[in-house]
Length: 110
Image 1: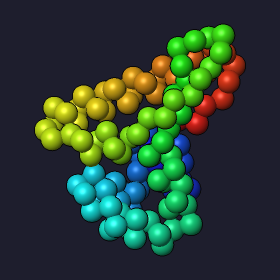
Image 2 (image 1 turned 180 degrees about the vertical axis):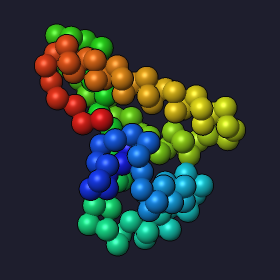
Image 3 (image 1 turned 90 degrees about the vertical axis):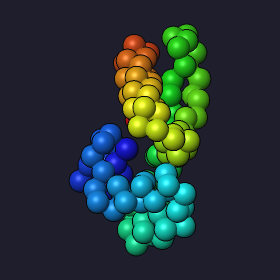
């Protein structure tokens, strides 16, 4: 999820720095990723948004928020099929959270 000023909150719209930082993190070079984003005022937001994202529960009477870890999910992938499955799951969960939020009138930051 992008956190740069131009595309904030848009999935799959990372700028070059965000894409490189994500690639470094996913491949195990966490320190490089953090150092790269340290030079940007919005860099810390990238970690907050992409490490933990709120997903509304399926209950319409009481909404509970669950933490889902985007980057950690990608980091566990070992094949291109794993990456595709993780991406499809994240998209599906995001779309469901959006629909749930619309039904309950709550705002979500996905």
